[in-house]
Length: 290
Image (cartoon, rainbow, N blue to C red; front, top):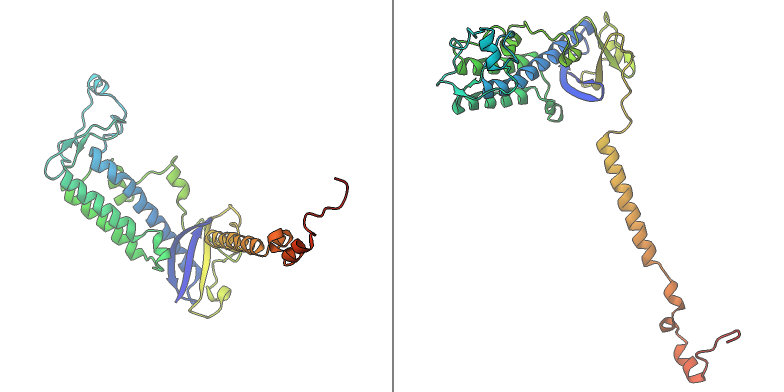
């Protein structure tokens, strides 16, 4: 199987296992599905701590308002009594006024946080270092784990406007957010290798040959962004190792220089004729005017 090390810019994303016979359309489809799926897991995981600490999201027309403003405007959260966490809520006010403050108890909070860490680990970028290829099934498993944990803590479900529920139902609205800049759709995705765009309509073997044991670094890029930067000849870690080796070598040479210092040969104590000169009265002789 061919192993693709997928990067965006200089940042590793995941490893993908494929074959040389795979059409590039299929490879790009797999890469974008896994890449965007991992982003979805990350977005849900970023909301889980807020859910665990402050409960469900308030309706959009109530977010950011003070209690006095809510009373004055006669607003009411109809989902507060429906979406109650298992074991009863623990009040912890949300200072930014985005969530209702009816948080799960410590036991239920632990369920959410533990599941979040497990889901993140499943599709983590550290899987590249562990030489583990990420699949779409692993992404779906991470999403199912998160969905299951939320259902345990909130058996009645989350309100339809809660961002976690919207992510699960693929209704998320990312317009105007930083997260929208990270997403790459299948149609706008370009795959680059060796400073060349791998064209759709071709097979992988037309670029890398028929060796199924090939490993290569590919980069994904949005259309119109041009070619990604070339990979450095040596990695940052290799550069550090080279600098350390150079420093150690310099220190060794410095010590050798000190060990070879022969300036002591001009000293009186190293003069083999010193005793003879002393008997002959030839010590303390200086040339030139006194």
